[in-house]
Image 1 (cartoon, rainbow, N blue to C red):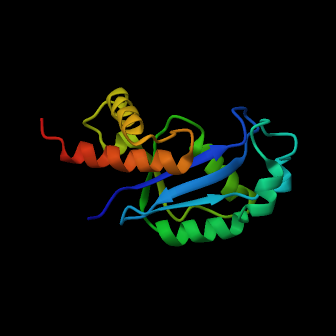
Image 2: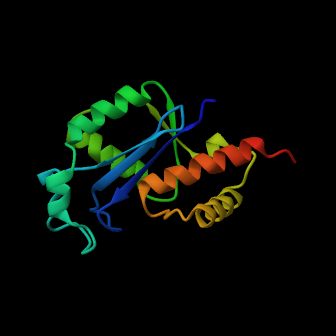
Length: 160
């Protein structure tokens, strides 16, 4: 079975100067890749993060932007990748790629484009039910992707 592809990004804070701290994306077989991002110095990470973000941990354990971009472009090449459209995922993704002078090898679309017969509010309510059911924390990119995969499966199997 082929699954739709999803992507989600965690941000350093809720401000306009946020930068990506981790990213997760799914593959056609439903597996999920999740990576901690080593912040670029141009993002001024020590000044542009919430107190909840451990910058030293990102620096010590994060993967470099060029390596993440290469892997994402290989995995998602020519495909449409869906985001929930609720936060700054697309802007954070653009920041990541622009910082390293690279471009998307895939297309970004919103969840409503994947399931045009469903209202966004309805999809979000079902996603919340799934999160409660499986104890997913929707604030974490990888767990949001898991919930979106379950949501898509439920919507595909729903027969009115």
